[in-house]
Length: 405
Image (cartoon, rainbow, N blue to C red; front, side, top):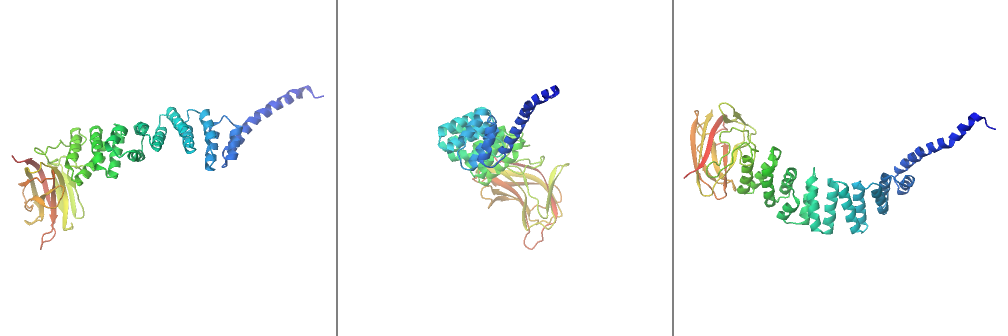
């Protein structure tokens, strides 16, 4: 007969064994879940049938082996209905297995479970594959309403669904600044400049300084293509909204940007373009205000350190006025201003005399605007025959241009 004091100890042994069993069972199930083959992971799911993560791991192992993972994914989604990833994976698996109707329902459950990008992107792809335009466009737009990072796959899918630029813009592109910015860049990359115009116009109306680089690059592309009107529309919108530090341009009254060099050049659109290079340095003198360009004598035989695109009315007469003085430049300096057709940039419509004056001098240059609607005003330097490269500087100020009556 056992001593009385040992009876409670013996009675506690089953309870202690039970307490040890469950942690060991959980540890073993977790060990099995780390397995690579479906059979091992299935053991974990059997030990812990209420663990949705184990069922998802089982589905991953089954898919790796080419097996049907539908049942495991259904179980995971039922156990954790708020897990959008489980619903998305179930929808994809059902579509792969040929059950398109069930796939659509599962993907809709994912969108109900999460307001994030992934379910909406999955639905857009699903309806694209089904050729269902009526349902594709709303989900594509919802994807872009909350998307971030690289949005080009969404834009590409839209263009694969339709080649109607206006329809894509109306049905899929939200009035969201970051999306408009990304879409303008995408369309430029795809060389769809005509399609990009309404997008750039909308971005100019909504954008901030963060969008300046994209819109200036867009204006440059338009000008390179010979399209002054759309570039001017966007440029003037940015100026009117003070995104750019200039007043809007008027082809007939004030077509030239920042004739006093008051602001730092933005380097695009209708602003001044500064192009220092070997043997050429440039800068702004703050007081008195002027721009200086210095040549060391080591510059190329022909160089263009300063220029600006200017919108004009075709066939109209214009007068350019400016002041300059030079230091240590000969009378035949090889330095002058020229006005070129902005589209061709070949034959000058007008050219000044060689710039050379030790004192500030006021000059005028008259020309008739070519048919393209914009000109390129260019400061060029060239070594003249029989002469050496110039070694000196020119200071420039008070530029203005107006249409002659």
